[in-house]
Length: 449
Length: 80
Picture 1 (cartoon, rainbow over the protein chains, first blue to last red):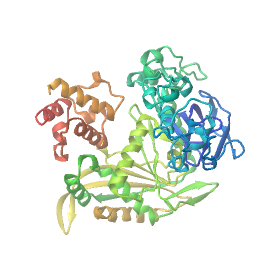
Picture 2: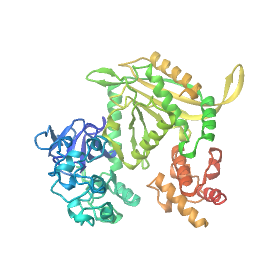
Picture 3: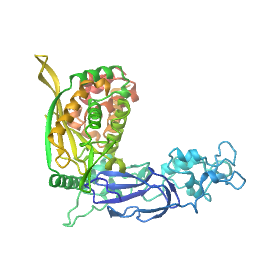
Picture 4: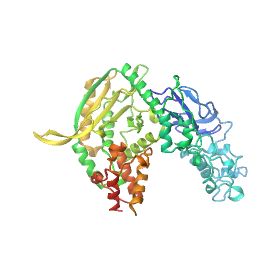
């Protein structure tokens, strides 16, 4: 069970996305874990074959528990490339649409990152006949092919056969990485302290409905009172922040930044952009923070084993407030690279997944700094607490029209107050000040972001 | 397209952005940002959803005209 942040002590294995015998590679999603931060997709950092699953679906285990064993598996599962093109290749491993029964699953198909690798298709050679596309779809839909009546030639299962077929597993409510639960049921679960990973859905496709939540037993704490998920999350946040305040000697520096150029550029850019590509000002600040960090490596680091480890790459964690009171800060990897349009798309995707509870494990552990923006409601500034093991945090207040002196004249300008919280074990106020000054300069030339 | 159909579509687009919002929570004349705790990215995603569903493009300078649900329905009804 991976630690998905300093505030996590245990997690519930909600669903395995692989089975024994499946070939997996670095970066594949192998399981879903229910944590205080919602449902997290767990990636694997090994390449090999799943030999044993040691923790069952629905089991809650402490961080550090071994979840599965992965072996080389060369002896049991043949490489797809080595499958002979002779008559011995069963049809189930072939592409049926063309009618040519001897085409093996190509190596490139597994390399393209599909969840079902060529290896896993072959493990199921005795199963019903179905094309790789059908198998992939079945995996997405959580449908076991063995229960499906094929309508194709020789009983081959077609894509149409899958649609509308009931999904069978115990964790059927989780489909395609999303927990199927109605908004009302989710809120009821929060209010009543029900762990939704433990609820069996009775709705369409196993979706969890209000009545399922109402008949479920709340998770109980030692004193006997139920603990709601939002309460658990708040406790986890408090634990991390207590640790931060205990361990990190914080310092703070603040700077007011004239956002006039950035907002004018943004307005003009958005006027000509398609609505689907429109940007928000937050993405400019995010990019500027990331670019400023390139030259201020002491702030872009993590504290490991009693010393700072600077990161060559910039992965800004974005503090996302969840409706209902939670807070999570997943990372946008390589925040300083790519186009602004691309960054905007990635930010939108990350925020919506943070809110729907579908983040990936690497997103919760790879941030090298955090950015928190509380300006939406008009606060002037924020004094943020560093999220361990990071060593700095940037907080933005609202952008207000202020009387500002430009070339000796007092003029109204939109101004944003930015605060840098730094860790005195790693850097001093001077470095923090230089970072803020670099951030200011970058925001004066938004066209270069 | 009737006002009720537009209302239903706008609501669906809104619950796509904020799935935890229930129909009964939305007061037609309340400020959506305050009442439903929407931020600028939520509003943008809503505007994108409306564009996709109804083909109505809402420029940034008109965001003030869709501040409440009632205003948004009127705005879209005049352009759909």
